[in-house]
Image 1 (cartoon, rainbow, N blue to C red):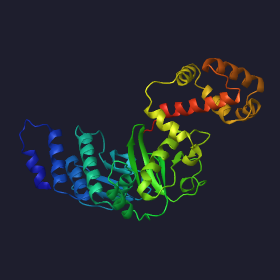
Image 2: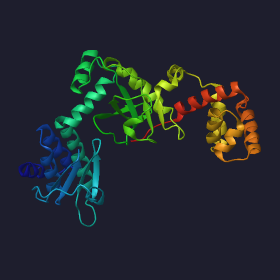
Image 3: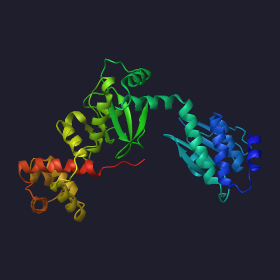
Image 4: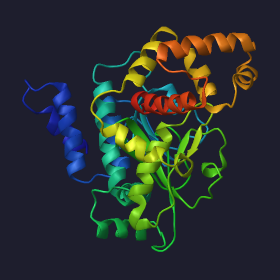
Length: 343
């Protein structure tokens, strides 16, 4: 490794330092260097100690690249020093005292990429994550999906459910972050009763897919993603079983071209009155305006007045039973059209 550093320093002097850093880590990746060697490379290039945490393990090296004592599990070091995230939960950092050097960011970026590749090649957790992604992907051939199911020890004749949560949510056991049209979403496969929230975490925003055998878990994933997109603060855990015909409705809504007038009217109303959404959600799920008033803490006459105003804005009377059904549908369309997930 030290020899590689000296060879890089002897490159064409016109080559930028950034290109040399890129070439350095590319060479280590091509050589299938271990995670510790990659970290040592970052320390040697930066001239200061470096460390990483990933998969519940920590490694730290001094400025010469020699391994030192690992940091404590509860240490603040990963977030104290200049660092870069990699993988699902990894972070690498360099311990530079004082002002950062010009190439510190580039070194961290390239070592993070290299560590991500290394862990993806060698980590059992990464292999399990790839297996989860394969099992639920309808585009993967069935034989490959069944091989992945066997790797996850799924019984081919038993039923399982896919659980979909925001990508930043940590779930025990194998899971995979799937990049969807609405942003990154974490997927896991569980044996799950109809009424139990994922992993016993009430309040966790989650969509729970239909129960399926391993060969059909792509359908469970699709229903879990729709269920997650239809969650609300009032209903953070949504079971696909409870959606009924809304699952078909949601699939058609995603593929339909023109926006329906009800959705256009709702968007216009919420642009001018963002706080109306909570009251509309309550009206859609409550049997009477008096019950709505008790739920949201407003006087009955105030709820009646607002319901009349919202009815005029939407173009239908949401105080009637058919109006509440129509309101429920357009609210579902609104969530499907506007809900996105960050990393």
